[in-house]
Image (cartoon, rainbow, N blue to C red):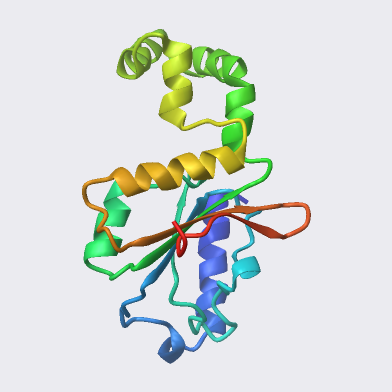
Length: 191
């Protein structure tokens, strides 16, 4: 079975198992957002963000922005802050992140780019990234060695954005995949 077929079959099962009346169709403002990694190993239940219940009812209004490495994406933040009402954001990075792997294996990534892209596409991509390609690629990816240092850098970068209001609270957290624990690196209430 191909993945699209699986998606469609699972959607059919979902629609048969939930109550359509329970599905959230009304948009509610929520002052809280989490920016976290796209890695499915980051268990949001560890911070109280629960998935839908079995009837289809939403259990958390917290907005989740998933990106590579938990690096903020400006368009989502502008809409979230100035339309959805974010007042507090938690940047949640994690141990064993793909951004750390990308940092340590940047040469392997370049080899894979060279083997997966046509020469024309590779040259176009290299031109977009700029010279020196290797170092610029690391920066462009937001690749990092240590998630604690990366979350500090990300919170500080967020605070410098022109669209971030002065009163927005931004926390920096690191989730440990092996223990499920959360480490507060930056407490937004005190900084």
